[in-house]
Structure formats: C-alpha cells, structure tokens
Length: 577
Image (cartoon, rainbow, N blue to C red; front, side, top):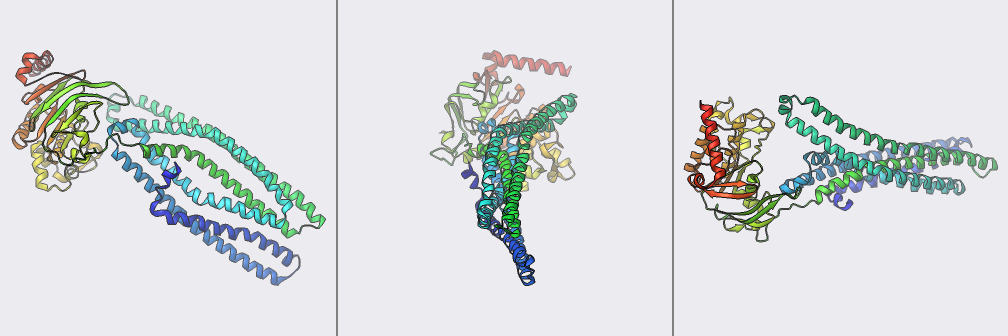
C-alpha cells in the first residue's frame, strides 16, 4: 500500500528528500545547545569567567539561528512535497475513475468516491508531511538526545529506557482499539455525502413533495452515526495524553531525585543536571511527537486503504487484443446475447438475436425494466455481455480499441446531462474542433436552433450546473445536437425525446431521415408514434425479444405492440376531446 502511494511523489522527490535532511540538521543544532548551556553554567557562571560566558553565549545564539533556518527550510520543503503528493494522488484517482467501466462505478457510490478524493486524500497529505518531517525529526531527536544524555551521565540516562516500553505498549493497545472505529466512521461519511448529493440534485423534487423533514432526518441520522463513532475514537485516543503525561512527569521526577543525590555526592555538576533536564524535555517532547504521529497514522491507515481501493480497481472494459481502430460501417449484430449486472446478479437480457443493417432506423419498445437501456449500452461497450457477442461493423466489440469504437457510436442517454458552460462549450463535447456553422447545422437537425436564437446571448448563453436554466425538452434537444456533432456511424437515442412534443419529435425524425441517411439510428421510446416509421421495431419484454417487424407487421402479429398502440390512440382521442 505504501509503495503504491509513494508513486505519487514523482516530481517532488527532491523536496521529499530535502525535508528530512534539513530536519536532521535542525535536530543536530538543537542537541548541541544543552551541552553549551552546561559549559556556560559550570565554566562561566559558577567560575565567574565572563570570557567563557560571552564566547559560549554567542555560540548559543549562532546555533539557535542556524537551527531556526533549517527548521524554516524543513517546513517549506515539507509543505511543497505534501501538497504536490496530494495533487498527484488526487489526479491519479480522478484519472482512474474516468477510465472505469459502468460496472466499476457501480461498485462505489458517488458519495464514497467524492469522500475518497477529498477527505481521505487530505488525511494522507497531512500524514505524508508529518512522516517526512516530524517522523524523521522525532526519532533523530530521540537518538541524538539519548547519545548526548548518556555522554553526560550514563547511569542517570537509564531512566529514559524505563519510560519507552511503557509508552510503546500503551500506544500499540490504543491503535488496535481505534483503527476499526475510524474505518467504520469513513463509511458513515460516505453515506452522509451520498445523502447530501441526492438531496441537492433532487431539491426540486424534495420541495414539490414537501419531504424536507424526511430528508433532514436522513441527514441527521447519518451525521449522528459519524458523531458517535468520532466520539468513540476520540475517547480511545484521549488515553494518549495521560499516558504521555505519566511518562513525562515520572521521568522528570526520577531525574530530579537521582540528579540531586549525584550533585550532593559530588559526581555531577549543576550544569550537567541542567543539560540532563533539557535532554529529558527533548526526549519526552519527541515521544509526544511520536504519539501524535501514531494518531495520524491510525486515522490515515483507513484512508489509505480506501484510496488504494480506487487505484487498484481495474476497468472491466479494456482495449481488445486485436485493437481494431476503424469501424467499417454501422451494422449491428447480436448473437445469443446474455447480460446481467454484476452487483445485483439479476438476469437483464437473454437469448438476444438481432441483425441491424447500416443506415437502418430501428425502434425499441417495451415496458419499464424490459431491458431496453441495457441492450443499447452493450453496443459502445458501456457494459460487456455476460454471454454471446455483439458485433459492430462485422467485428466483435471486444476486439475494438474502446475509444475508437465509442467515437463512432453517439449515445444520448436516458438521463441527459449538461455541464456548466456556454451552449457552444456543451455542444463541442461532440467535436471540440467544430466550427460555429457545424454547431448551428446540428442544432437545426435537433430542432434546437429556434429556442437558442431566442436567448439574449444565443449560442453563448451560459448553461447552469446540470442544465437547470433550460427546460427538459430543450435539454434533450441540446444533447441530441451534441451527439450529432460527432458525425457517428451509429446514433442511439435512449428515450431522449420524451420531454419533446409530438410535432417536434416528428421534425427531428424527419431531419434524421433526410440529413443522415447512412447513420444507423436506434430509437428507444415509450410512444409508438416515435418509432412507427422505423425500418424495424423491436418489442422487448422481460429481457427477451418478443417480436420484430415493421409497424404494420407488428399490428398483425404482436399482441403486446397492438395493445400499447391502441391504448395510446385511445389516450390521444380522449385528450383531443
């Protein structure tokens, strides 16, 4: 785990190395100071020698200034290394998520991924800085101070050796108790972030159904779980402070007791006792630093595991061994296709056999949960089949270079998404090099140019996050235009005209027939009118193809299709009357 995380240091290796080096030099200066103080007391103050006082005093000031300089450099290098490490780690995680297949994303909730990219990375950043600075400085201080203390008085220094195992055993016990609590707490943070995200994205629905109290209770419950676990963890770690105080004051008392006896016996000077007290403070302060490192390491261990889970997750979809980069045409063939989602394990599609010729318009009709969206998502490999195979342009989709395949398949998903930016910015997702004329042309095809021209800024109109300042029908038409800008060989519309009136829907389909006759068009719809003119219509039910044919053929042989058509006709007649 540490090896994987350390790869994110990269260009900050120099800063990472300089941080402990400068911290070590700072420690060297610090441990020299008590010896100089002992010399000043014994040879200067007690002896009344002003020359020694001035000479050693100036040396003390010089050591203090040098120590300060190295401390500043250590802090500077440590801050730069830790922030750089966090930036690289966050970028690596984000790039990894971008490469995930839908099935990989299904394993993590959105709230969990956000928490790992923010809270967990921040924990690791703080721990990294502490490890390269304090975790080096503390042991070096401990080692050098112990050496100097033993050089002053080896018998009195044995007191330190009694305190270290007591502290080590105590910290080890606290670590075992606290780690599971922190792991559980981060899962609760994931859940709270999910609740917040769902609430904010669906705030209009929440207000429309007057469910503020219900959503507030969900948030309060999630927040309470975090508070309870955080309190429990802090209670466990609270024993760290009294343990440190016990070791510190116990050591100071023993040094004072035995030191006084040694001075009375004449085997130790006052200056040496003062230096021992200084080394005692340094050693015990170091132990406190180590205890702080232990607390941070305990917290970050849970964060590290969660971050590494993101980095270790390999996309279920990768480029095929043949790595085909050219899609010959828009033909599509399903051969004995079976599909189920890994998370639920429920069978979504079975015994799917279908042949679609290039340039055909194909309609897909079926009830909710019949597998319509699952079927079309197999074409650009948003998911892979569980059995059988899907061929595009005569080749198995698993043999293609994934990017090359998806470049030739434009898909308007059931859930339309627009991003913050101008209308032009959003449309250029289809082709980043598209000219203004190209953008206007596809907007004409998608029947979007009319309402865009009514905006004061027209194509430079700013789209708010999620497209909240345009209507559902306008959003759908912009998404269709964005897909058309790719000039794909296959165009898939997954119920993407549901918010568009029937007249506009008809104009869009007419524009498709006239302007992109060579593009294979697959239209998922709830309205029969939207697919009535298709070259073939597929009727899905329970994840199986029940019937395939033209409108007239299905009216004669498909009871499901006929029932849907007649019910919609009655509904339109009732609305008209």
